[in-house]
Length: 188
Length: 193
Image (cartoon, rainbow over all chains, first blue to last red; front, side, top):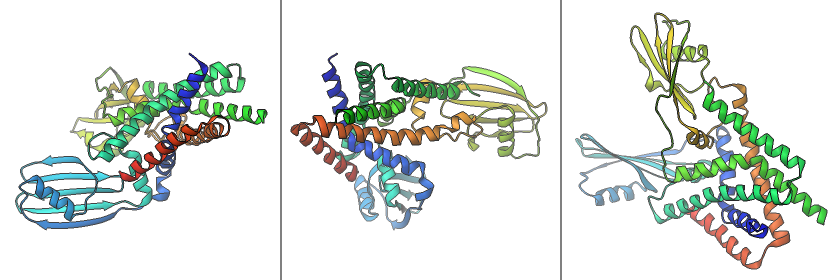
């Protein structure tokens, strides 16, 4: 394949995802050093009385509890109905006691570091248009990581194949990666 | 100037090669996560047996830890998997690449281990979350945290060097507008969620 074409693919695959990649690198460090930033979220509990009959009632509860994000879990049993909602900065649990007809909303607002980590942890196409757009970005990032890695290796072979240091780094990386996977898969 | 350019190209290459396998794992893992794909296998593929010293006075957690160490296994011990009666104790060790189910005879100390490998793809995907801290793991696996830390730093360096090369030597105006716009749009989307 043409060198210039591969170079363009390598470049554009990276350029299209650079903002998300920088976010991932930054938030990965936040996750690795999470103890440094560990703060408990601000917890707010709200209790509301009243029967839940329809989806509109749930919408009213979401508004009353100032809940943000998409629904991540729904459990309905005889005694209790539970819905959980989350976005990058908030996690909320709404539980409705069928017997007493009382709803408890527990809302957890995260600090900045954990809200940023929350962006890193978002995935999936369900939810709002923003969630869809972010999931689409994630797919592009996933594909780009694979494409610009592979095209980078092809470019190396075309341009600097005889570079001894490059071979040492590549071989050491491959060996380390292969031994790690082997030990994980075949160790006790 | 030519020397400086070739040096930066080489540095960009070295950084990229250092981190390329990790990036492949991250790329595959991001796609798996985003589409909620189930890649873990959970079938029993093999079994083996061993004999250990059993102290019946230990509680479930201590007994599972003791057995794990005597049998030379690594992995976390999910508490909800403990099952104990007068003669037998069952528990599991688990990590990103496999789950072992251990059935321990409390009288004879004989342990029967069922091995359930999760498969290559699950292991490759699991490296995304791996921090080298599997209980009772060999020292080599603990070095992953260093590789991960350096890998991210080197990725950032490679990214900056690549961007610098593009901006300094080969960028076109339309590329600046298109990818600059995409950069801002990405930040807005991240802020939006």
